[in-house]
Image 1: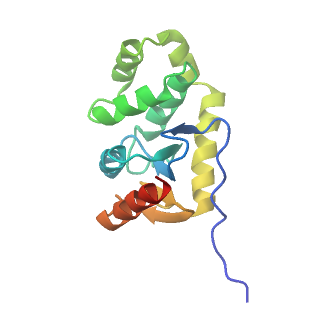
Image 2: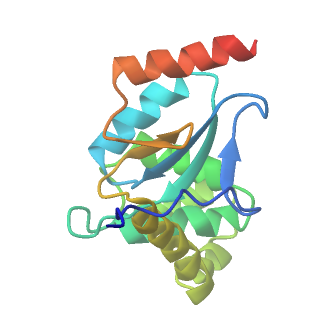
Length: 173
């Protein structure tokens, strides 16, 4: 009998959002900007010298602004400011309505009209959906889900997982 399982994690694509030292261990993060647990994971991961790839996994059933904020981050990315919008959304999860998204875009120096047009475009929606679909195929069921060395870890990263990541960083030094 054939054992069923998830598809492998898709490799990084040229338009994936990646930051951190190129020689650091890679963590692929499926997350949602309205998710409190994703904020906790973000804070814990930010403290480590890792290479992080962010992929959208907006969970509308729990977070009604998840898709809107994912599209906002992508629209900012079209003007070269994805990570700035990413950090801004996590910095104030209590203000995710459209007027607050426009204010963030303005504070980041974005062309707000272009930002809004991009945020509502089919292309941006398709980009977010691509991340979401790749997460589903890879077995993501909740946010956050981190892939470390190809293995999935659901939830806020534990102290043990963080210690393993730090150990992997130390081995590369």
